[in-house]
Image (cartoon, rainbow, N blue to C red):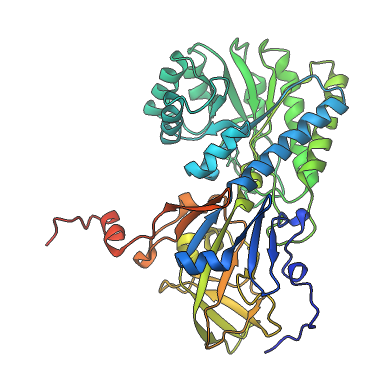
Length: 463
Ligand SMILES: *Cc1c(COP(=O)(O)O)cnc(C)c1O
């Protein structure tokens, strides 16, 4: 079915691009209907790029990461100044959100500290540090279960002078950590639930409020940390976490003389669906104001504030591009056709399947077409779950023409998808490009059959 749209349409607006509230201020549509991305005065034409490098394709924009992080740090620093807040602000990048080098390096250059969750992530930090790739003032927080190898690496790096702070996840870990020299932290399992898809009845992370409050003096305890979950959907919920976290922090400062930092974890969301949403600027204002008020009331020093907002910083810095390779009719459903794509939601954007992630989708070419169709997208694997249906509604995309390919952009794919990606049906992962300073670099080549086979033990020597 056709949906008529007027000839004088503002196509940028129509596809919800060019709107800073939606994190799409970098994107535009040319008069020929091609998707573009603007870095300073340089303009990348995504249609030209995908024609040259082929699809499926991921494209990373480091300047977006840099922009988002520098703005975020600025908001917190500015509100701390405005309110006369005497603690410091620390941004710790949670590495698990995206461990790719092209994400880490720009964030380090913009002043990110780090947060890691495993021995293997920490190993990469060790490599960077030993290669003198970052300033020794950078601080590394270590979450996640401390296996023997992980703890050994922490102790090794600590003894070599890296500013590294392990965070105890449970009481057993705490017993090990109090014995080591230097600062440590403790993770509290707040007795409240956030408006988040991580709304589990029983949390297995951290130490309960009651047990944390019963701890006797720990001299090297510097940080109290909590993490409520990802993509917290309301400001209220985020602020309630800060309130509850602060209450415990304030009580703990009476017992632990070196405690001076409240780390509120991750969870700041982004508007994947391009609907009205709360902003980081508003949250920075409210969090600083709230902490100032509560610490003054409790008569304690303003805590240093650490945040680990990963998804918020990274998601908008990458898009994934597919080509429609076939069309199939849908007889019963809100959409009229499947567009089969040359990639896979189950492999490349696994959250589509795992947590019913919603994505913003727009055409890469023909974005000025008045001939639109209600569609769902189907992945190339043989699995019936490999699809994206916008939650059972539909997407509008240009009708397919006999002449010329139709490319489709999925926005905000920079958080979590890469490390979770898989090879169902042995499909190849997308080629990955980096667009920076007006040039395109290949960060990951398109996988050949040979390369994919090797991942499954089919080496060169096989007969
Ligand atoms: C996953 C995680 C984060 C990042 O969460 P986002 O929702 O991406 O901001 C931060 N801190 C901890 C401890 C985490 O486990």
